[in-house]
Amino acid sequence: MGPEGFGIDMAECRSIALEIKQAIESGAEVCLVIGGGNIFRGLKGVGQGMDRAQADSMGMIATVMNALAMQGALESLGVPSRVQSAVEMNKVCEPFIRRRAMRHMEKGRVVIFAAGTGNPFFTTDTGAALRAAEMGCDALLKGTQVDGVYTADPKLDPEATRYDQLDYLEVLTKDLKVMDATAISLMRENKIPIVVFSIHEEGSLADVLNGRGVFTIINGPGQEAI
Image (cartoon, rainbow, N blue to C red):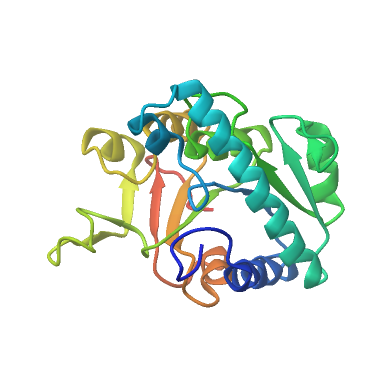
């Protein structure tokens, strides 16, 4: 989503694709989980009287549209990629098959996971945590609008302060709105650190992968960041 506040902004897609290209060139294997809030949010549909399962299905389809846009942006930069959807759409992308996804990554392709978990009542955060666990990822990186996790929304509270590091349980007990509780718990169980950073800072993804820049790490006692 760009300055219009709705829909797909290809300039924004290209900007993110450039970040991913830098990460690939640094030697990282990258897979992405794409949300769909710029097109349709399931909970917003529920608030307008829609059935939750149907609204979530619409949200999952929106993520497929975003994933295809991101694939186009990556491949325009010469970065090979594959889209795998948890909801089968064989005419436009591959179904999610774990071993096939791992093989794509081994060959240097970026795998873009769409449609969340493929089930209603689960957020894209949970879809990201699930794929991170399935793919054996070293870390789950969440690119957001701000440069980490804050005590409150920094856009609303000028006195909000950023955490450098948090324990999984702290996030849950303090009810910090960085990811939903299911996603945090899944990462805790699999000992996969979460790194929250701003996707809008140029070079931020490469910086995070090299331990530089500004971000918040969520992990457990004695656990390495990445």
